[in-house]
Length: 561
Image 1 (cartoon, rainbow, N blue to C red):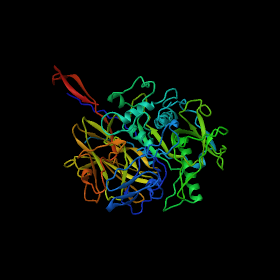
Image 2: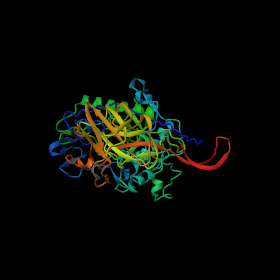
Image 3: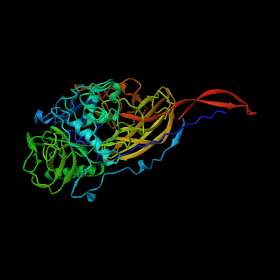
Image 4: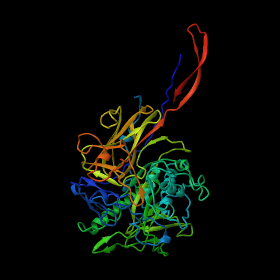
């Protein structure tokens, strides 16, 4: 008698949380900038980095060099994170079957440590050695890979004797097939958004010892798609320094409150995850105090953030550290200029520095020795999101086709600050359209910080080879829907989509292909991913017996596990 054995894989996902609020009033479209935008203000409509939108005419305006769109003009994304050798000029215009899963983690998401629990000074000693980026413009990649490795050290999974390769990260971001960044991979600059979108594609990080530069380069396509760990969450912290606009000029009290919140978040993230990536103006190190302090600049009577030029890792703080700023308090930065810089590669930057920008947290999965919780990823957005749509009635979705039998157990998607979501897994779609099939798994929760989150479903579901399935996301913040799309190609990235991949319900009347929704410009693909483990197929031989116990011929069958 034959016996077919199905093995079920355990799934694990981390739902991260933090705190900010969307205040979108009556906007139906909010356009966000990749990486350099203030993480909170870009969706609040109160900072110069945010977009003002008149939907019917598609007029979009934003100051601070972030975005200027009217009609079908191309918008630009800043790449300001350069090497010190390039100077301190503003770089912002470089242009079926199922198995139940414990979901208690989703119900009780992890949160950052509150201010009352933080010490007045702290230094994370469990970090990687100081590195030297030489004359490259890869500070962004050095910072991102450092953050990923330090996060893994903090979780107790690895030690600090090796680090992840910034060269592999940048090379994978700019080469290969599909959506890609097109600026120079060594000297073109970059930002956290570029790094995160690449790592979320499971292209890196890899160990420097396994991929030494320059000996291992150029990389083959298969070597680009290797990762020692998977990026689980990518979180935007509060922007420390807001910019005045013609419609709103920040008072000193407002600036103080925003800065205090931002610094508290940075401290809390360091305390919990090990480090934070941040950029600042790298010129003007005060040798006497080994610290930086930059004052606000004034442009046409508006107080502005000083242009940042460099990305580093923040690994500690001291509320009593004295700099050239009016008040004490500074963040400890781990630079990529070698050990001859500062104090063995470290320096301080005042809490009041007006160039601090883009604090960013990388949270990696607890995979060990390359063994991951999920081994199969479904997704279309190679370069992540560049626009968000707010105010639609329904959700948005991606439709995928399994190439082999899969156990789908989790989804990944971007969320606004102070958000609520419900994500659904659908199968048995009619004509490949979401909303027409059977909902076989769901997950719901809230988010504090804007960012990318990995969320596991309440059950894992078997999808057959060749079967279509949909991941549908309904996300809101402040009572308004919020959806993330990759937008269109620009001078520094190439993206594309195909019919039948991404869908949106704009008016509650059902899902339409994003290629048919053109009123607000090009959406291309929705930034939604699915994660699974393929069912392994093995051929085995067995011996079947007759009722009288007489053995018959050996037969071959397939066991999936």
